[in-house]
Length: 300
Length: 326
Image (cartoon, rainbow over all chains, first blue to last red; front, side, top):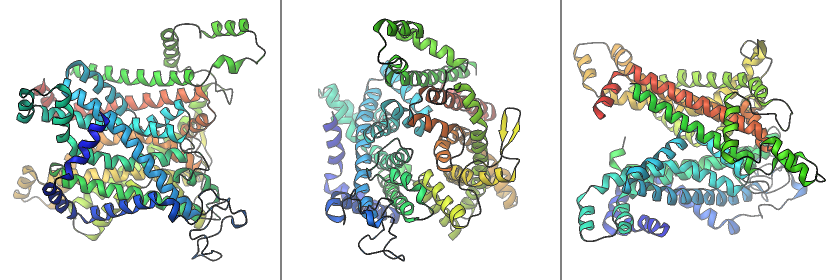
């Protein structure tokens, strides 16, 4: 099931013609180009974190605690963005934090997408009681503020990075279910589905091979935007002490532990904040661009 | 009308039931309460007796029913950490959170609506572009970071405003207010801005989108043809019609504001319910967590219900659409 969903997503743009057409419409949006460039850069940084980062992220240089960034007075080129209260290199921690944030985003969105698409597909295809049960459950989940739901889930499962990712996946779930269901209902009545059914396609084939690939556009957009909300929520949970635990170089928990040093060493707060801003902004810009390109109906 | 109201009430009850189940699950998932209450030398008989006394040997649904019955009376037991009744703790913290949330909501409306109108009417000025770009950045910044940056600028660098706490408060019966003292008002500014910023961008974008939509409609063209002044058209005709969705969203967002106050309260050490809840989570103080979750869900569900009913009462079009749909 997950394989079918994943290949459906990657197969669609593989054809040359539509791909070029898509790129032309995507490239019209300057913000979207900036977004995709930043995202690619961040992915490269995350993949190469071990080679790019000048120091190990958890190495404590005790004689260099709270060294300012190199362009400030008292800074050195050894620690480009300075060090934190226990002497760890900020730049290295931020680079490793990029990897962590992207992994958090990827895993939570992936879990949510696989479960959400399956539930939405089932609800939209079978209708009836199944649909009512699934959709009412999603309504209940949507009825609660997302952050509160995430905190409640973490409170039950216990604080920690993995549990924070499950919590975020649960929070994102209703959006994918609703989107998929709506798209499936719209597609299911069309002629190509009927002809495929007459040709003898089974239920599973109809659901995953015939209908699902035609519902991918809104899902891709939502998944991209889901990345940014996953990263934001993970940072918030980390900041509250419910997500990644120290010494993990997660941006939110870095900020929480740096808060008391804000007066003496503002850089321990500003750079992780900047990292979150740039990453989330990049995914938001890319998501907006994708929406305009893939889904002309939604264009403002 | 009656069917609609009933359906909404049933839905709200379902949400509350799920939240109560989550809150109840907290008690069961986080270890055996008997083990933490008796010493390691307690015999099996003693444990069994305590279990019967606490009602833990009864079936799950009976226990859950008992929990819901108590919760409905505002009875959640005692805080494990502070030893006080949870209802008293929440009541003590309620005014701080409500004051902060309401001021933040007002701020979001008072700033958000004019900005939205401006960006809709003067679409191509550099200020509009700047505001729109700024709102995108505002959405991409986590709330706690905005709070930290505000502290850095206004409390640490400029030293104008306090960086934490609620200032002096005045007691009005059981309600404590910080709105009547200078230090209370000063302490409120930064947290209120922090909490309102996200909603402000949301309202601004909503008002802008709605205004652009309404300005394209025929009755606006007709109003122009009648020779009405731009001012009358924009504010008397267009803005008035955008306000219904704006008020709905604000009403719905008020619940979100109260919930998101958790983060703002943590950043500013604001002595509200959110801070109480986060401390409870970190100390596994389950009665407090359960009570907070149920309370917030109740506020949220009630607000949703009121907004839905008001919407239905205010907008006659909705009634006709619903009637046509059924």
